[in-house]
Length: 86
Image 1 (cartoon, one colour):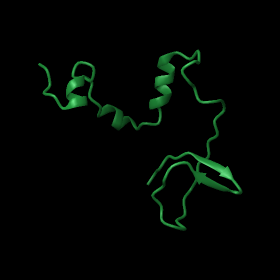
Image 2 (cartoon, rainbow, N blue to C red):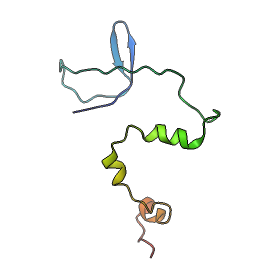
Image 3 (cartoon, rainbow, N blue to C red):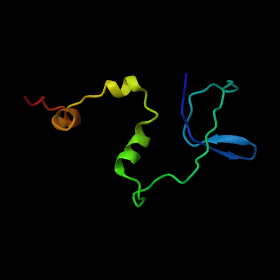
Image 4 (cartoon, rainbow, N blue to C red):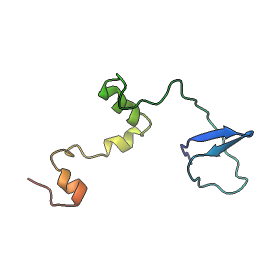
């Protein structure tokens, strides 16, 4: 199982920032990644398409391919369960 989570290193241990689904004393392998720069916020000069690409880069391709392509035209269907428009 692969699980992505953020953690804080303090006192010699990694403390997860959200709940985890592991048994006590379960062995795991950590792949550590530290941010090179602060996370982007609304007042950066980064183009919106670069920001959007960063948001979806860790989503598996098969999951992205399974998403509907008519989301804008059929938003009431996907958001509120309304019948699809012709």
